[in-house]
Image (cartoon, rainbow over all chains, first blue to last red; front, side, top):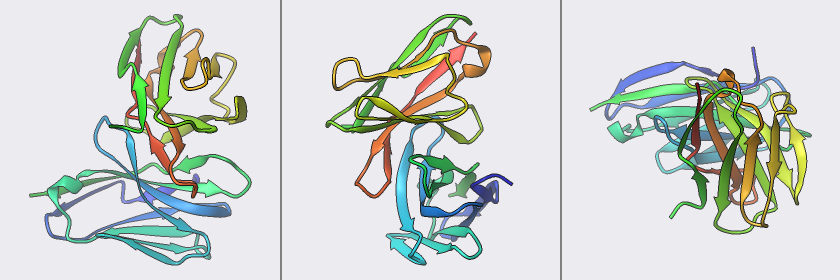
Amino acid sequence: SQQGEEDPQALSIQEGENATMNCSYKTSINNLQWYRQNSGRGLVHLILIRSNEREKHSGRLRVTLDTSKKSSSLLITASRAADTASYFCATWITGRRALTFGSGTRLQVQP
Amino acid sequence: EPEVTQTPSHQVTQMGQEVILRCVPISNHLYFYWYRQILGQKVEFLVSFYNNEISEKSEIFDDQFSVERPDGSNFTLKIRSTKLEDSAMYFCAIPADGLHGYTFGSGTRLTVV
């Protein structure tokens, strides 16, 4: 698999439910970031977690990082229809100066 | 007001033509990045630009591509002879807060026909 594989590829939930997206990567990283992209628009930075951190919160977002398993998860609690978007993880690989993006999860929140 | 403005928002060009995509950050930045996203696919790194020089580039960034900072504030990505497979969204990005988060522009949708 490539750096930054995400699952599921698509997720459909009801408003108010929680949404969990997972990301796996292969190489050593400095940090891992999550971005959101509305259809046809630019990417919006959501949250960054450093390699020495295990969990981070920002509003309704909770990110975990397990460097031993080379995986991360993004949890969106109490989802809203406005959360409908694609969500990408991106890794800052040790020794590089650019982000490597995953393939993304398309989240659909039904009102 | 967006921190990074990209122009044009959409460009249609004939195969073999040259295109120039422009990016204007609000404040001066030393680091600058270009990424592209083919429709429905992942975001791919093209090139990073630091202090008026290319810092790193991907295998996608071949001789058909070039980047410049023509007047100290604007950044441009030039594709000399466009191919059909160059059709994609092109995003520029700047470091957001010194912690390796990025602020992305809204993108230029390039369609090569």
